[in-house]
Length: 565
Ligand code: ARG
Image 1: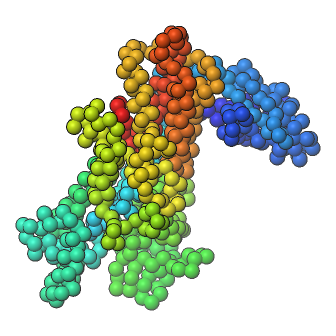
Image 2 (image 1 turned 135 degrees about the vertical axis):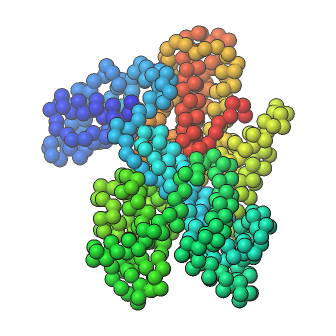
């Protein structure tokens, strides 16, 4: 049940009864409570063609608005706006339907499509750091959201497992013998040690170079070493995914190396399309309107990041059959994706009707607005950051004596990880993002903790109530009206967030919902003596639907709820 389209329909019918021809009608959310629930601002643009005063048109229109169903009241405001209030009885009945539906009345898409979501993509030679955090959680949320809405989602983890640095790394791994695996626990250190060996020992450096060639030519010994290295490194990433409740698995890994075999073919096909030009010995695609060409093969014959992405693009479009391919990657790669997408379309690697999108995000900054680094200027390891989140969350738990030690550990995990994720997901992804522990671990404001707290509040009401909620929802006052209408907006919000790949539209919604609930909860007691049975049941039902909506929303963000907080 998409709320806005139902209202649009009512307005459209009014237009038709008034004998005015319009194509589309789009109501918007009212900007203030006194302007009703929704507003229609589409009259003014019609005034000119109809040669009438917009207020006159608006007045005529509201005379034809059906006030027996969805809408209860329509008023002309300002120069010709129409303010709309929804009908309490209708809203209540819709909330009841949502409450009795597992999916909270969120319909699955009528025409689902196959979507590839490319996210996380860590580099196997390095420890995962905070830069990968954003891609990982924004991407996972988009994948969850589209799945919930019914699309066929294929998660793809385009890990960096290929390149000259692996020669040096596997030569070092071999040299370390049985100690190799354990010293790989700290990839950063391992990399530094290997680099040191490479810089200081000529023989080692030669061996490393030789190993690069050997992996490329499929030498079994070197491939085995490389495989072992990737295995361990990927294992570290999977620990992070587990901690983060991110659903990426090994099945979702399609590493850069997966496309190796197709790279010569990519070049050949580009030649066939007359798209390649040699420049200083390198093979380039010059695109119209672009100063810098896309280099697809170096003068020595080596391939590049862009070549692999072209191979990946056609694999995703043609083998996997994706109709939308979303790349959740740092905004600094915007130029790369713009060019690669263009080449993919011009070469016919990807059909015109496939949507290619770069879901870009900004950098993570510290409080003083500088890129997020450790005290000594190093990159912050993701594992350290997440451990710290849990420690800080433990400190934030109030009334610890109410919990067992085990409960505190679990709670800290859920709160801490939730806080890190929510803080990231709640900002406009394209802006740089200021990381602040204090802000993200606050019970106040637009935080996961506030949402988890609202949810736990409702669970505690139900623990005290101990019964079964039955009976109708009866909207008794303004706050109940606003809360109910907000609950019915959920589906529209999710659909909008899916189109824009904007998780912050979900968090803003959840925040508004939880805030309305808190006001409702303060004003309208449920279990207090003197509240009649009918009112009690109706309020409990609203609380129940609120909790379920918060839970579902957080679930899409990959954040857990708790029953007690
Ligand atoms: N490994 C890349 C990086 O760390 C991200 C990969 C993004 N995906 C892609 N298909 N290029 O920057």
